[in-house]
Length: 274
Ligand code: FVH
Image (cartoon, rainbow, N blue to C red):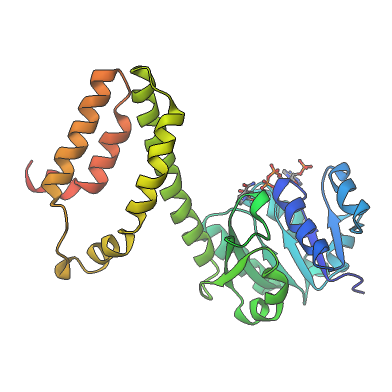
């Protein structure tokens, strides 16, 4: 029997934001969380609390799971394979591409339609105008459930390889973390000279925004190196990064980050000139 439109398993910060977006849009929602009190605000807003994962899954044709990690997904989902049969499972938990593919294989055996997702947002951004969520896996199930998935942000389907959403998700997160690490390194240098991270932030935001405009051109160099005429030579890049590392050393700031960045961006130079 299906009583509600959507079930949400996992009511951490992100699961609560997803369930709240569904309720705001007038969908009927069943919720389950290991710590049941986290459902209180949602049930006050009309969500139906389930006493077990099994009854939560049976309540809706579309089941979303958003918990800590892949291991937790398996712990929750595998025992209810029979209840999930014939339903759509959308896994919004952060996993690796291989973990997503393994979950898709398991779903195939269990006759569950599997869609994997990568949320490119923090909880406050769910339902916001600039938010997008990546999906991959069962294309038909994605299309059928698209109106619901669009409630979280733009729903972007990246292919029927179930691992594709996780791959792009982690590629984007990797770029983001590298950027934040660079900012923290710069802030340490600025603070060492009496400045503040806030002053640097005011300069970093417009500068980095302008720099992202060159991603498309940089991508040509990666995709088709033979057709690419770089704006900056690899020698220039290597020298610039060496200067950053030297400035860090002079300021007593660890140089592990510029050393790693040099290995990525100027690696071919080092390989050519041992
Ligand atoms: N928060 C964010 O900014 C992001 C951004 C993009 C993607 N993620 C991913 O979403 C997954 C959940 O993240 P979250 O922010 O909701 O995380 P928490 O608030 O820490 O909630 C964790 C939930 O997982 C439940 N849980 C943990 N271990 C177990 C377990 N052994 N059995 C059952 N449930 C478990 C936990 O339950 P409880 O502690 O409340 O009882 C929460 O519901 C994550 O993959 C992010 O990478 C978030």
